[in-house]
Length: 289
Figure (cartoon, rainbow, N blue to C red):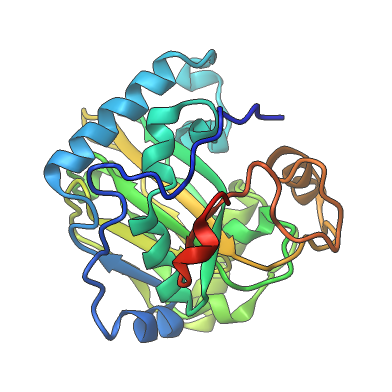
């Protein structure tokens, strides 16, 4: 279980985190239709450069072992993963818990507020493999479809580095079975996407500070990193405030319940010490939460 950092008010003012993003009026409608959207300039060049350094410093202080590429399975080749850095590092926390990011997530889903589920720094090394087709929410024991992931590159990306691609509209199909990220999920879901005739959407390039947002059930994948540069990406997952823990449906959901919602049981609101409220339309509810 993660040990939360010493608590500070989430409404504490940092240089930019409480400033709203100019979200296009059509964004929520497009997100509801496609299950994903790309937003440009969610963080400025200077903001994302600072965020990149803060994340790198936090990773450097984290104990981890990396196997040689030849000894890894498909999942391990897809990326190096560092999870819930916000709970151990105050500097990372000010980005992950930024109201700007949380407000975008809430407005895209059409909910009043959002709580952190967890963060992930996903680094795809030069020569790193593809990320198989999968659904994020396969891993999450929550009773809502209002879940969302922000995927923000901290360096400029071109197609050779492994940009996310999405099966537009696939989120409406809901849970597609016990299919964690693997060779099996790649085979099953690539056939599923083709058989259903889903349009596969992928950006041709992303600048550092751009971000994609996708729903928890949206099928997505990414190509390998055939470049000579590290693909550095920070992700944040939010769930709608007020949602509850559901009965775990697979091994990964049992594990997630213990790791990211400590002390909670099915039926409880998702509001453990690791699930802070980071944005609510009624700002008065943010005090001390």
